[in-house]
Image (cartoon, rainbow, N blue to C red; front, top):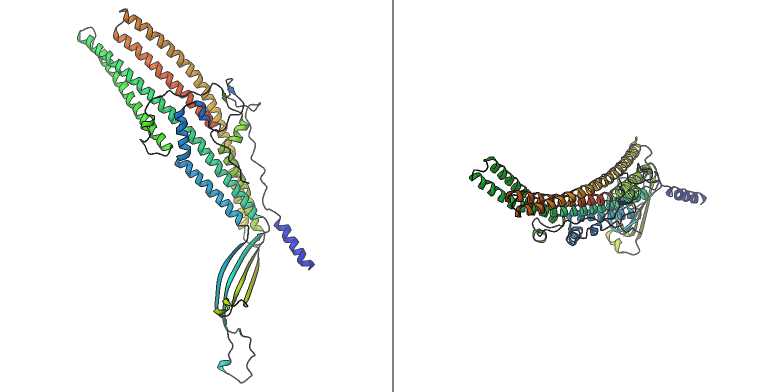
Amino acid sequence: MRRSISTLLLIALLAGCTAGPDYAGPPEILSADTGHRFVRTGEELNASDPALAEWWLLLDDAELTRLVTAALSANPSLQAAQARIAQARASVRQDRAGRMPTLGTQATTIQGRLPGLDIQGGPPPSSGQTEPEAESDDALSFYNVGLNANWELEFAGGSRRRVEASNAQAAATVANAEDARVQLTAEVASNYVNLREAQFRAEQYQTQIKLQEEILALTYQRYQQGALPLFPVGNANAELEVLQSQLAEADADKAVLLDALAILIGRVPGSTDEDLSAPRDIPLPPDQVTVGDPASLIARRPDIRAAERNLAAATARIGVAEAARFPKLSFMGILGLGGSSPEDVFDVGEFSALAIPRLEWNFLDFGRVDASVDRAGAVRDEAVANYRQTVLLALQDAERALARFGQQRVALAARAQIKSQADSAADLNRQRFAAGAISRADLNRALRDQQQASADLVRAKGALTLAWIALQKSLGLGWQEPARDQ
């Protein structure tokens, strides 16, 4: 009795152990700035933490908000990411259920013939007597209907490590889906801004083409009068051809961007043309921009969260591999009705039970377990390197976006100044034309310069908004904190 109790206590003690290293978290990576700020943060940026979700609302564009909402609900790539989450969570439930016993129904029949085995156990025949009817019965028949149960116990906690790895992998899948959401919202906004810029560019080219056509007609008229040689006519015609090719390019850009937006919201190309055909102003980012710090970036970006969870899963799988070094105890049981004839399965008095415990321990495997553990350790080392690389690239992405955003602010201010000067020059040339001091062709050239300055200003506005969108993307914004499983 004491020996049985000691054996059970030893089994319980071994079952409480868990093989492999416990996860201690990812390696720490800090900013190069001693104050742990972004190196490229300008004075105009706020170091407080930004809001996570729906940054596009800050652009105050109802059409953009509608497109983003449609993309989040109907984009096929995002739907595929959600399906991968369902797969990962089902795997977690499967691994958890694998730790529990199984119980099912079964119907069993065994037919065999074992020569030399007297199943009936009758007395041996007396010497000298050979009666065929008294020969031993060496046929075996068994029939059973009832329940069967199986349960496997691991002494090293390999199943617990497997569940731990599945939970971490499922969390990584959720983070990957949130990263897909970040990428999607930024792509929708970028395509939308590019579309508005292309529409404005097309309008400007159409206006410039009309002005250039007048310049060409006036130049050709002066050539016919003998006041100009032929080459100014050729130059004016070449400028017109350039403008027409630029208009065709802008129209092609509009078509491509309209189709891109249609695909992003889960619709066929051409289905958004009517809704987005009317030009609208390019939305501008808010005056106050919050960026946080590298520590908040690392904690917030979904791709970093996914890399960290992959590292946790790889660490847990080392324990799964190491658990193979230890013994496993399994139980199989059969409980039901049956006997040596088919009629016995209907006889409640013919109760049968079978219990089969099995202890398995592969103490000699010629290094298979060692190789498996080494492989799991190498996978964990790869996950560490991937995490570090993901963090470094995220910091680079943020620093680059900060630098570009600051540069586009300066560029927009310069283009606004150029546009103001072009407006003043156009007003002055209108007055000079009205006074007869310059020709119509000279006035049209000034008006063309004004239109070009307007186009450059709109392009600078678009570049600033695109830089702001890239900044939101680099900061890992545009997703909701997922609900944690209980």
